[in-house]
Image (cartoon, rainbow, N blue to C red; front, side):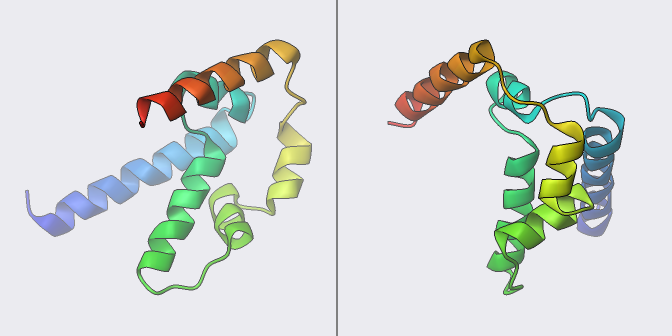
Length: 104
């Protein structure tokens, strides 16, 4: 496979993941994604922003989120996110601490 085809396939897979998370599975909460997978929609939008910045494209955190979410983040959050419960918050704290320890 040539590099251009690989890049196009990776981009198509990314767009499908984005659609899945932003349109098909809005019921899945970011905190649950963080607890189970170690990343969430906000991570993906930050990685998008960082990739743009690395290529000399000036993009803020809010611009990266709006690009990824397809709308201002506050609007998406208000429409689809719910307040995390105590169990979700406790699991997040545990997972975060384990991740920090693993990076040492």
